Image (cartoon, helix red, strand yellow):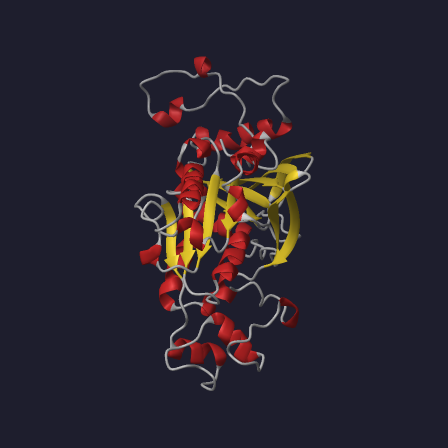
Length: 383
């Protein structure tokens, strides 16, 4: 049963008559109510009466996610028969000539159902009730809460949080080549039910916008995923206690276990390089164990890794099929894309430019100069 609808009154099926006569003569049911039923349950039962006995055999329904202020969701000329209110929920039963309406409201949304003597009348009254009732969604804040993990020599693993600025994907999308933007489109829209693979890999030259994409990803996923950045990834996989604390999370409550977490490890070139040394190889094994080994079992943990390495130099265990949720190479914009982004040709190289170079050109600096976060709100952290 939907969480947004109260349960209907209990029907005592033993009292429903059984007869070979046509269905419209056998459908009336006897309802038994007791002190566990609420007034809203009674209204639900009353509403079903005319539909059940065939007096109004046609039904049409519609859900409104956000009801515009001042809307009753009742057709014009409706006569209210019953109304029940409790906390932030209400149920209203109303009728008109040949039709009956039930409006169940909660918080910001509502369900509207109309029964009538004909399908056309039911649809007409429903359309009148909900036309223009959908309110505009509240604007989302450009601030995202992000966690930051680090290991303190005196106090051990520590986590702190801060709010960061992150643009929407539609705002950030022009910063990437068409191929990268298409790959990111699917990643930004992914839901927990669609997750297959626990490793997210972004690789490419410095200044191409890997970190900027991750900030926007944190905003796109904030309803279901907490994003944490590990500030010392080189220490994380060489310290079992540190790794275990991060794998378990800051809060081991049931609610937190059900919420997904994305751990961001930036600039992990040595860790996932194909010719990694023995120490780095041990760390890589622990990383992979966190994504799809015993350590990650029962934990809703994703690991996002950025690296400047070429794909050919990455360890084969990292890029094997089935391990990566996404593996995206983030490169510089082509010359036409860079000129379109900048709005001018001056300063753009023959082969294009990276995002860092374009921001520098926009600020009037040389292409090798990277503007600071303080110079432009929201333009930093794009390496």
